[in-house]
Image (cartoon, rainbow, N blue to C red; front, side, top):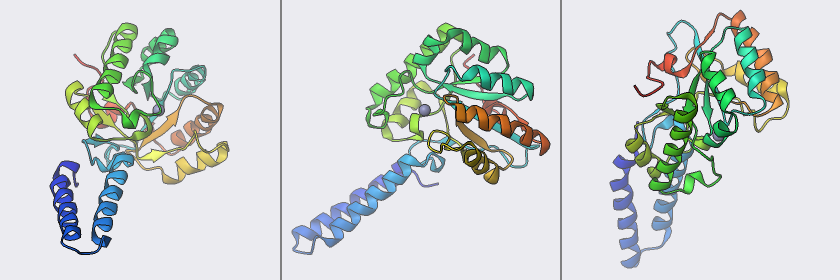
Length: 257
Ligand SMILES: [Zn+2]
């Protein structure tokens, strides 16, 4: 897969040549085109976590693994998490919760309960700020370390898995995770449960694309997700899928020793 570090010299050379051509009296067209192509590739690389463009990412397990699926829930814990936990327990399903540090402070007992029921908790930054994608490496690292600390205080373990808010990756995030040594986790099946408001549509979207080894992205922050999970778990059981945590699906360590 093409990496940003590999392409960087190409960008510099192409845009530099185009700029020289402008100085030599050529039209601005080539410069405009090379800038546009550069920005397009960088933008796609930032927003499609599966490309692993800026840093290595995990987004799927092997399809050959005995019909394993990893459900994941971002942005909690919240007042909706207990309902999700009840459903998971009922179907003997395990999942991964990418928790926001601030929410862990707000719901410490619930965070402990997630672990007690055999699920995995991953880092989803301390404050999940809207401008996360525009932070410098030092700020990103601080967000990661603050969330780690919140989890260490509450569940007594430091998570190894990290899911970047909005699934965004960029050079700052790449530098930060290199320092904190988190595994960057994406998804292969996105429910869009925070965008679509009709439960049936969300359910259909997930089921239509469902493959063994999928990492499914949900948010345990709305009633829609609860309703979708209520419908999805029986379907998964019927089709012979087993829901496991992401660390199990990918054979990674969930917490630091
Ligand atoms: Zn999020």
